[in-house]
Image 1 (cartoon, one colour):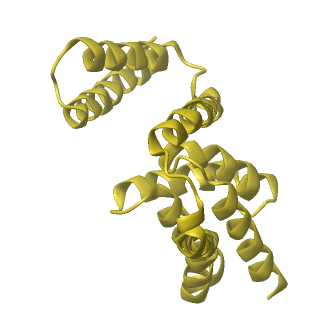
Image 2 (cartoon, one colour):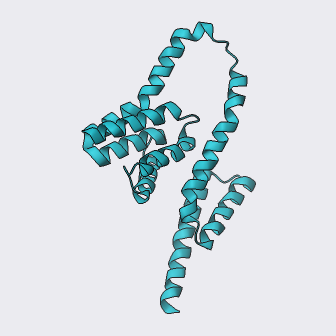
Image 3 (cartoon, one colour):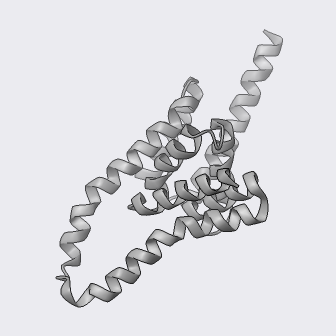
Length: 180
């Protein structure tokens, strides 16, 4: 039960510091869950994959998946509520003091944009470094970047193209290793 409480506190902390949402929070989740040995790096990578396949925000899906994986249904529920609790408290407080706050949303958005960009970049680098040991990964990443930047092909199609390309290229390299 103490471990479930510790996991709950971790997700409350993530909920308070999760600015930008989505991928900007993945680095923080990794630091907390892998760094505190709730998940191995392999389990964390699996959690990201499953969280991306299920509908809804990645942070909530990861909280639910991690809680469920470690402590069953009650763990999933508690982890999800723990992640959402800070947001609900902050929104409730802002609702109460809204009339006293100056509403300059454009300035606020511009102020938060650089921090969000840094968090997303940090997550990208931290998650990709263990996998960027093979030159084929660099080639596939570069091709996907060029396709996204210079064509009007849907990113979903590009993900499938890169996925199938990776399967074919890695299958061919494994065959070549067997025969040569």
